[in-house]
Length: 290
Image 1 (cartoon, rainbow, N blue to C red):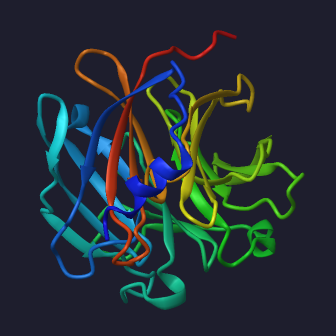
Image 2: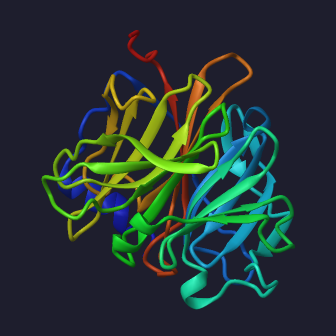
């Protein structure tokens, strides 16, 4: 059944990749541990040699990335832990809908939760969160389409975005947590049917947004790049239908040669006919100069 997405891609036709990116690795990840799947966030560390991944039931997994000739061939799981609530209990049901992942320069792990709208910070993933961040504006967000994406800037500011903006012609608000307060420094324009499902701020200090459109027979993915004022919008990638599975997580990192790579991960929704893919694209074009 795992052949369904390539077959659909052939039926839909293959759109040429923009010259901005080159596909460099495509890995079908079968974790093998109990409850593996549903992965919605990823961070790639140490020059592409380690990962931290988040699923939508509050589980964090981490380990090494093993490569051959630059391509991923294995991702062993060294750590598997379920996040905890402030009272010490493990997250479950409505408290466990974890979607967005970001890691600060100081090693703090931040997780955005979609059902009970909040962002939590963890120094130790086996312990309760250090802090939970929320604000009244989050309560107006849809319960299954709220804080889907999370990124952190070099200054430690957090950027959280909902999956849906509420209307097809309404831009997506970007919620920023900086200096102990939330604000909305800019908004992201909606372009077509795509919804925001992942975000990262790269080493170039640009905001990368992973977007998804479910067509009924597969998924399309798009990646847009912005500066941190919401300007300099650029489309780096837009795939044909069913080129990849349900991509939801993105990490942008610098390789040992100084280039930028985007690592993407798919959420299989715990369905046998979907798969957990880890996809990598090298960015071939620098961001526009302001």
